[in-house]
Image 1 (tube, rainbow, N blue to C red):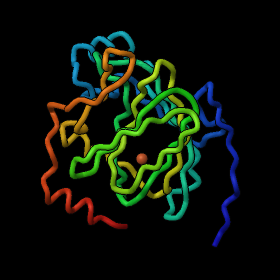
Image 2 (tube, rainbow, N blue to C red):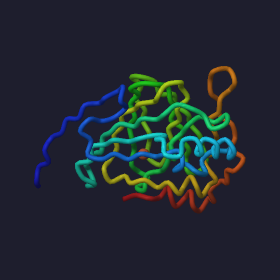
Image 3 (cartoon, protein in one colour):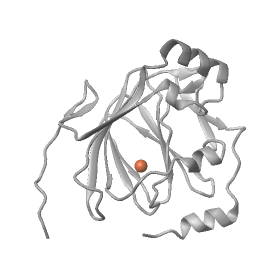
Image 4 (cartoon, rainbow, N blue to C red):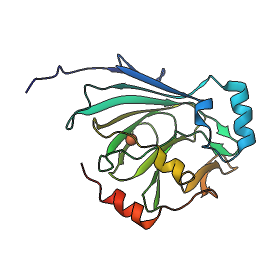
Length: 208
Ligand SMILES: [Fe+2]
């Protein structure tokens, strides 16, 4: 067995990044087509900010080996498309039995979780909250605050991400919208199509 070198990376909370990260990826507003219900508001946002970064991930990825771990930072801009708060694309892990951990550094966010069968859980993440995303849950972050949302995370290095599971269902089952009183609320997504039971069964049976 060859040993890897230990690593240390500083979390720049104000900058919303992992200093010394080995990878960085960004999503612009234009990359998020199809996520939001208000298409006119989305088109206006993209027209004004097509190249602006909606969210960014910086991570330290020693390998993609089973048993290894990826650590990193995610930074999301605050805002809304129509009444809907900014969110990440969301995914289930390609190896869906892999979990994840998120830790709030700054801002106010939600972890929106959906089981393959369509159960919903919504967890509020603020500074110093540690969020456990269990295996087999589709997950998406939502920035419901007025500031940028910065979280650190860790997950098994061989998890992988499957984004199509959300797109194929017409989105997640609920949308997180402004409640008109300075807070958020979850409303049904009219475009949502439940997964067929055979598909749910197949996902829930997936192991390594
Ligand atoms: Fe994940």
